[in-house]
Image (tube, rainbow, N blue to C red; front, side):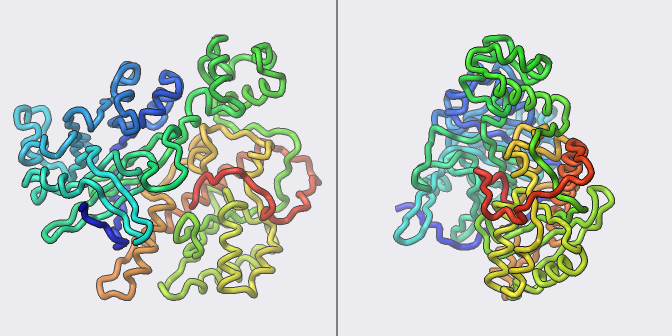
Length: 515
């Protein structure tokens, strides 16, 4: 019987501050089967800029073959088919990709023994061993997850890879978000996933609809995972474009976003299946990306008054604790950032009291702005207040709340980005993050580890300054987007704000991010 991995808390760490990671792009077979490689996949590779491309199941054999290998100089490797070794000198990482650990040389230093003068392995800080040997199953009755294949994997691993090197073990058979530290009586093995969701770890998952998986890999073993919908690349990233319309555009010579932006809606409307409204929508979307500007549409108004920008960090995607409220009072560049953070692990409300006291006492009813706020920030804050501070609920409900993402998705503006994620939109407008290697999932893991170990003598202490700085990045990015909306909209003086003061009854269709 395979060893059982319990619900033990995995170790947690942040990447080295300021380090540029190596980037791995994991492409499942269905992406190559279902999408135009020279349109969708090529655009994804250009946008993400990976150091290595790995093929993942299902049908991984489709990836490490032409046409993928023909349009890029990036190494394309199927870990299940052949052994391959790659060094990324900055940040100093060796990627060893093998069908089974038994194919490895005795130690990492033996990898390039015959070519040390050109492929010097000395001084590398971390090794990543990639295979497809490990899979995850769940025992729902005992609430246990089980790493299938771990016994055989460790038995086949050469001795020099057990104890001579800092190694993270990565499997394309595990979903990208999975990570744990598997312990034996003598060693501990960091294990991470690099594959798409599979039916073995959840019900009703369609294996034919797989995301692209971007892994930012650091020299201390930290990995940040970001999934991408393939339709966020190529022609299908344009509003109103699906596979059929993308094919028709290409047949008529419009094989790039620039080509579409360079024509007219009238010319696009002549294509079969393209009405005037659809043609205008597609042209506007392509023009926004080509120019890097927000394009306003009719029917939308922004709130009156100077906004207060907020971003929250919680204990998970469906979290019920707001442990950090980041506030930007003012504009993107000159605004004052205020972090209201939980200070004691057993007191989840004092900082929320402080936030509400500041909000109601200082801002004078100014609009509160949050990205994806109607689906995430605003209702989670309300639930937190209802549970721990009900006396503040009415004040929160009476605060004017505005969500720029919802505003755009209702058809009032087009953003200049492939997707409507906060970072993607802000980056398209010229924003640059000051923090690296942190996302909402990482921040939640740091917080949860702190809470669960805080009463222990050697309890974990996150780098709070970096987590607060990450939240500051988010609110400054949000402010930049809002300012771009203002510049684009040019509302006439006297325009009234909408009557609906909250967004609780509004729905945006999908959750774009959770931080």
